[in-house]
Length: 100
Image 1 (cartoon, helix red, strand yellow):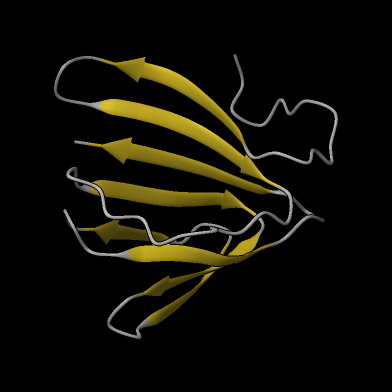
Image 2 (cartoon, one colour; image 1 turned 135 degrees about the vertical axis):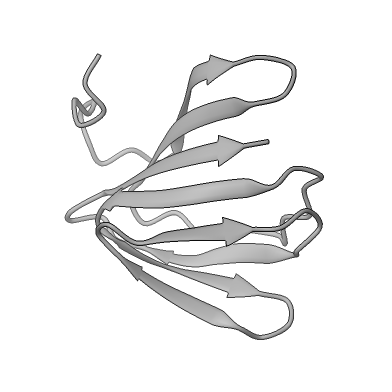
């Protein structure tokens, strides 16, 4: 598998592929083509995020806004409420997310 081998795009849905997991860690590839969050995420895990392609905006409930470009990384702490308010479609966003 190559992380940049993408299916036919655009897709109406975000595409989430679990690359590896065990009881402590889950690694996902997420492909976004303009999708945004309908609700706030409030997850129990820490999430380490790498935006491998595209650009995106993540908003946090405390009003911090993170504008991401290709290559950016950031950490979302457990129960840090957030949502994705923008994802590029050309190029698509290719995320690598590690939940632990």
